[in-house]
Length: 307
Ligand SMILES: Nc1ncnc2c1ncn2[C@@H]1O[C@H](COP(=O)(O)OP(=O)(O)OP(=O)(O)O)[C@@H](O)[C@H]1O
Ligand SMILES: [Mg+2]
Image (cartoon, rainbow, N blue to C red; front, side, top):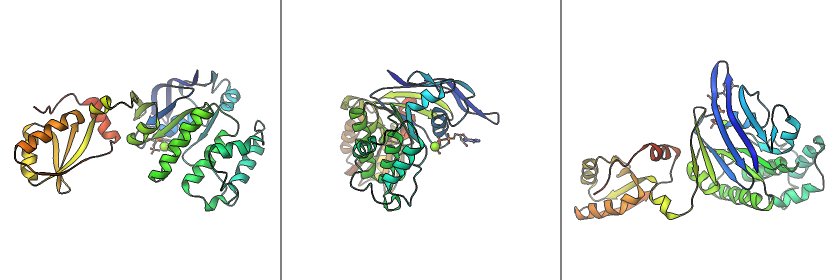
């Protein structure tokens, strides 16, 4: 079942195309990532999904209901957080949820406790929001977005400002929600490594255009073919750099080592060759992949082959 279907979506503000012919879908039981750098158009897309902006061209439907012509039915099926959860800091988490529930006639107050449990906030829900960590605010924000029992959850960069533990907790919680509550999630971010761990599928947006779609596989085989950035620390960085340059590899001297962009499957051979040249290797670090490196993966052929 398609929870979200965007077709040919274009948004123009003051003659400038902010979004250009975007199409994407989110099905139930899926966590779908929306990955792009600052200013790519993520928040704009999410505002259009939530009915907060006027569509210039194209269509958005939520559970089969058109956001423009069937607004109320569409909104009944979506809950979201844009940029930051909107909470009253002097109230407790529970008071925030009760207040929000009282403003929406389709919220069952009995559900509140279940939802608090679902986002694992039972222990702190009666404390004031101003005493919460950012991760706790995100949880209450997600609880608020879930109050009217929507089938689609839309989150705009919810990991911003969270530490690695907070990010892992959010990830586990979303996976749990998808499994237990059967919702579908559409989540934006500018960090590929984060999206890879969280999502089943990722759309990549840049300058208002979808430039790629990736299905995430967990098998090792596929990571072998991915391109990473490495830093190699050796007892002769000059000689290492010369050797890499002779292979026309994408490399440079950096931070007391040599940094290198290379397909993972080519690293074992490269290391063997460096050692054969009498170069002593102290350490090799593989960096978390960034969006930039994934652009490189997508566009780079098999240059810099190691023989
Ligand atoms: N109300 C507006 N008026 C004019 N331009 C706007 C407006 N809202 C957004 N834009 C422009 O649209 C583009 C996309 O902005 P948007 O906020 O959707 O990007 P984003 O992907 O969410 O970026 P970030 O990662 O920084 O949150 C930017 O160039 C922005 O300047
Ligand atoms: Mg944004």
